[in-house]
Image 1 (cartoon, rainbow, N blue to C red):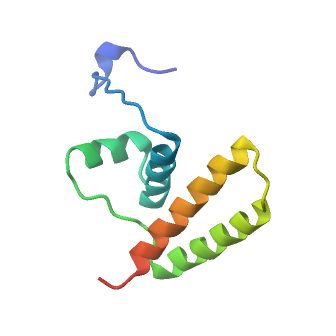
Image 2 (cartoon, one colour; image 1 turned 30 degrees about the vertical axis):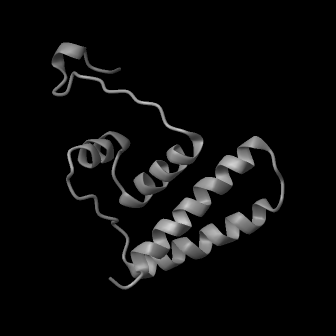
Length: 102
């Protein structure tokens, strides 16, 4: 059971709208950051650094698994599959950018 609003450390709510593409990108980055959604949003909005917690070995394994999932979805165009494919592509992009030399 959640605590009463008065007992919360953070008691202000901020809401905003995202397109499906923007949402997929944000969710991909949240997954790779290893942070909870609220913590990720706070750090991103306040301009704090958000780090990906996985090392190269784990990132490479994640990328391979994501590619397999993308292939398994095939060419089906159900709404859920379209959103899932967008999320998988964004996750792949983020993992590939993380592994690229600086």
